[in-house]
Image (cartoon, rainbow, N blue to C red; front, side, top):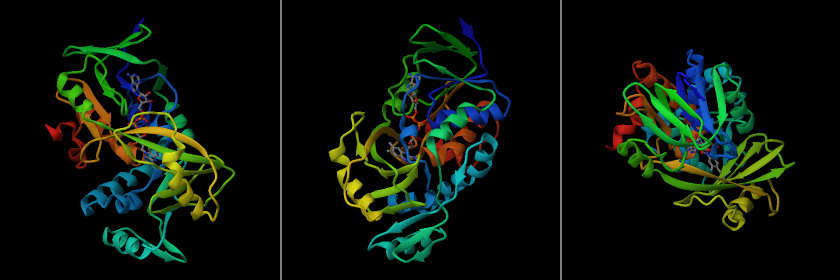
Length: 336
Ligand SMILES: Cc1cc2nc3c(=O)[nH]c(=O)nc-3n(C[C@H](O)[C@H](O)[C@H](O)COP(=O)(O)OP(=O)(O)OC[C@H]3O[C@@H](n4cnc5c(N)ncnc54)[C@H](O)[C@@H]3O)c2cc1C
């Protein structure tokens, strides 16, 4: 049986669902196709962290400003789509707290000294499970459980075929498949761009019953509130897309994170996600040269932070609206 939504989004991670929610709020009927199960977005800590990510990644002032502008889209986005935005701030602890304070200030972030570190109110958070569920419930968004196996298109519409034989047609297709391989039938230039996305395995450990009132970071670890406990993360294992938990690789960060809470080492529940990353660390978002084909891919460590910005860029591209200035930095063609 075939149906014809205005837009089909392949992938129900944070980028796919944010794009779907934005499009639905603009009046489009959107079908999101995904097989279900945990993805990187569901494993993430949900930090919306322009300040600490700029500190850790040694970003330029321009990149820090872009991350801050992306964060500033969150209050209206969360309000519109029923996500709870937690403006708890974040702390940096360790011998290098003075240097962290100088660097954050130089990048224009508000920061204050606290007893054993520095604190910024500029980093926020969302609870990822409830957040994804809220996005999937947005009126106008329907989520279908299936794996897209094959695509074909002409100038008018895309044919989207699932592994179970279901078929949909749409004039506008958004590929938001995370770090997965390119779906068969994509134009070679787009498939090549997807093949160049680097997988980065990330592991964090969940501890039920532990608590922190805000995200605390130090070199090599963070502790963040999560679902009646905390998560301690996260490894960056470039080139690795193996979803098998490997507690040994997460041991050091777990000890550091527990140390931030004044606790000795213990085992948590290790969770694994694979991030997709481009060579400049920003996502591929917006229209491609193929008619009706749009990308929302590869946000590296900042998929949650960048979700509303990617959604806006994707929706503007589908509607043919003037792109926001930050769209240029995400343009899928920038590596051509
Ligand atoms: C441990 C860890 C902690 C993190 N913490 C944070 C954080 O605190 N803040 C932050 O901003 N970011 C964080 N990140 C990064 C963030 O999780 C990613 O950047 C983001 O989740 C990527 O979202 P996505 O939508 O691109 O991909 P994904 O979440 O991987 O979603 C892609 C979806 O596409 C689907 N798919 C793939 N192929 C097909 C197909 N052929 N047919 C149908 N569906 C398909 C998959 O099933 C999947 O559901 C973290 C990541 C990890 C691993």
